[in-house]
Image (cartoon, rainbow, N blue to C red; front, top):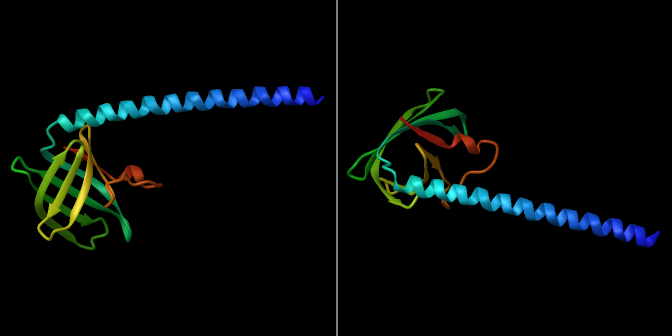
Length: 142
């Protein structure tokens, strides 16, 4: 009986290892595809106007329009959907690979990842926002 139980456990463990290898392979394939998209995005022209509604801590969202100019300057217009105010910012931007860095005239820095025909807002640590609202941190090229 013990030998039978040991044999069953061994088979289950081997099957679990096989699934983990398959999951790891799928993850690696997905990472490669994302890297290719990132590399493609990095070689594309980021100049243009991007729009979207970014999440807001105190309301339903912030309508955002970001214009990237050929001279490496940007203009950003934001307005709260609840009418709590609108703001205009100007500054300069740099592009390094698929990372876009914006520095406004006040010295504040924000980061975006360049994707195909859109920009994804990143955290101050240059990481993708996670959680329920992660998919809402995107500005689409117009």
